[in-house]
Image 1 (tube, rainbow, N blue to C red):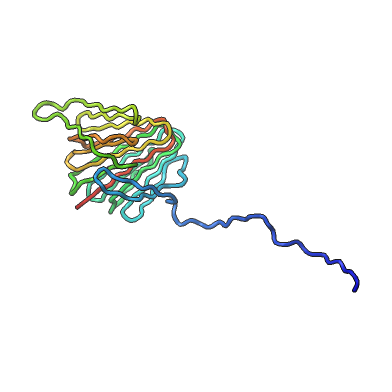
Image 2: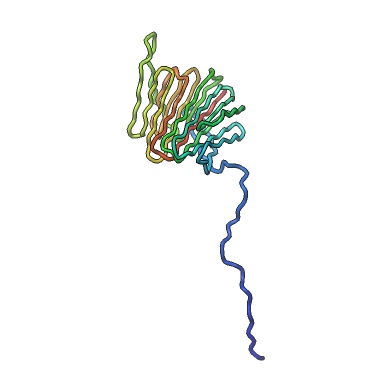
Length: 229
């Protein structure tokens, strides 16, 4: 038998070609949030945020809002306590939503952001604004009686934040270097409890507007949960 040489063609390519599939939703990630009132939910979050304007997505009773400008981001949310939400961000138009139970607001890139919640009507049940881990409530009662309510400041350097009440406006400022989280429970009638960056909770009364200022960090998360019986 004579020797024969065979020429073989190139075999299958060993190069890895990743499969690319279109995604049906922009909400690609999730984060579990435990609220001070004891409830816990898994919220969807945006994997990528636009550098201009912002983005929103409603999934059932959950509303997600994401803003990612390199400069200051602003979000204004008006909640009627009955599932009706009006929201605007970064100077854009007002968007209306119905049937909302929970809202999560995600900011990235900018190290200076302001999120404002306007509570326009009495709640039918307890509500909560929360992000992060649940910690026991450490109540701090406002002044009572006929005397004007005093300005109160609660500051914890360990958790990088400060809460200031002036009349019916509560301002929470957080300045962690990596990621800021704020937890605020609204029990209705102006009673709220606030946690930030894993610290203790503090109670306030007579609140109609909650302003959250985030500084230093490039990623922040704040969520609003309306809880009805």
